[in-house]
Length: 129
Image 1 (cartoon, rainbow, N blue to C red):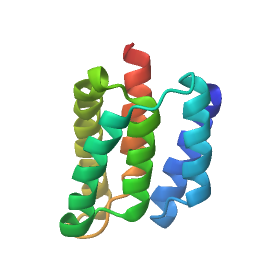
Image 2 (cartoon, rainbow, N blue to C red):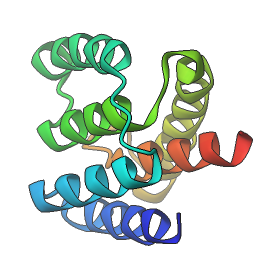
Image 3 (cartoon, helix red, strand yellow):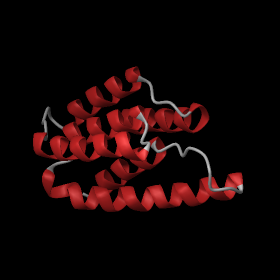
């Protein structure tokens, strides 16, 4: 779990600074999540997330890195039974991140780095179990 926390921090800070999530980071976090989760794939959760994420990416401007990261987390780390809890944490984290970003920039326009919210909501889900 310590490696997941460290890699989550790296992904979050890199996304905050560069507004990018690298493919290597997504592969590494997926492997760590698979190892920590005893090699479970949650296909139902992954498919539901993928459908919603593709619509959000096409019509809502969600970045490709955010889509890949959320899909990886959903596919390998979130069982269907925990999806409501994860989504609750994700919405709260995105709201907090949006308020902090708007307060720091003093304007509403611009991109918001979502990796910190994604990573924080997954870690909150882990701690709530």
